[in-house]
Image 1 (cartoon, rainbow, N blue to C red):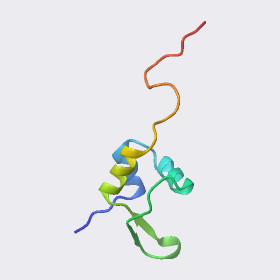
Image 2 (image 1 turned 90 degrees about the vertical axis):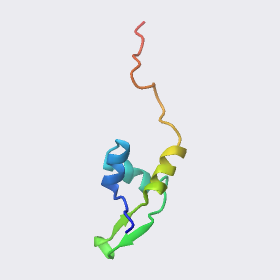
Image 3 (image 1 turned 180 degrees about the vertical axis):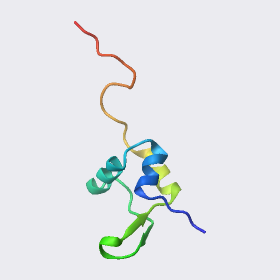
Image 4 (image 1 turned 180 degrees about the horizontal axis):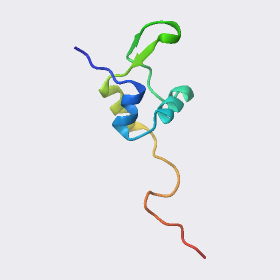
Length: 74
């Protein structure tokens, strides 16, 4: 049996919010789904773990200050 990840499953896998994953999908910066089940408004999409792992490893890093650093006051 093939196990696919949903948006919620992907978010949990990477410690992101489902909204963040949906934003990447909307912007076209997320890979196309590997499977679709249902039709119309009831359609559900799924991604293989290796698809999302590859995306995570190759996506650009976050901008901004590295986590855990403190802005220096003048």
